[in-house]
Image 1 (cartoon, rainbow, N blue to C red):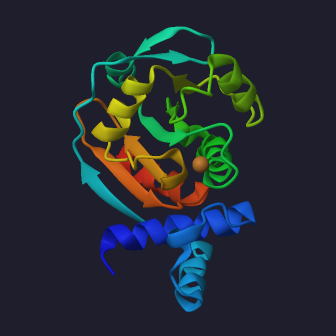
Image 2 (image 1 turned 90 degrees about the vertical axis):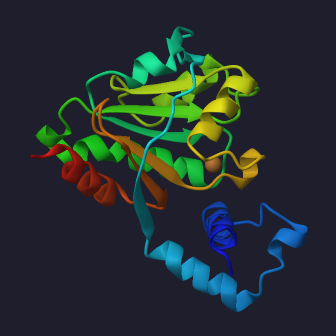
Length: 209
Ligand SMILES: [Cu+2]
C-alpha cells in the first residue's frame, strides 16, 4: 500500500473511531476488516511522524474570530513560536480531538510555553464565519494566544495547498500539526494524531536550548 493511501485509510479509521459512525461510505470503505482493525490499533497508539519542511507562505489576508483582517505572512513572521493546524467547526471526527489537544498544550508546557501562539485555520470558510469560530473557540477555553482564522474560499485553499494539506474535500482532511519555532527556522510538520504530551515534547525540542 502506498504511503498516501495508508495515510488516507488511517484518517478514515480515525473518522470511524472518533465519530462512532461511518461518515464516509461506498468505495472508500472497501478496505477489509482486518486492515481496518490494524489501522484502529495504530490510531490508539497515537502514532505520528515528524519532518522538517520549508513552506512558502501565500500572501493572503484572512479574518479572525473578531472579524479583523489578518495578513498571514505578518502573523507568521512574529518572533514567537507558532503551532498551527487546520480545522472546521462542524467536524464530528478529528477536529474536536485536535482542538482539545491544542487547548491542553500550554498547560502541559507550563512556563516552558513561553510565547507560544496557536493558530487554527478553518478549511470550511463558507460555513465558518468569524462568529462561529468565536463560539467554537470558547468551547476550548482561554484563547488569548490562540487565533482562529477563516477567509475567502480561494485564500484558505491557497494556504492548505502551500502547507501540503489540501485534500480536495474537507471530509478527507488528515490530522496535521505544524510547528514553527521562529521566523528564520524551518517548520516541523507532524502528520498523524499527536497527543498533547507529544506536541509539548516536540515543542520543547524545538524551543529549549
Ligand atoms: Cu475534522
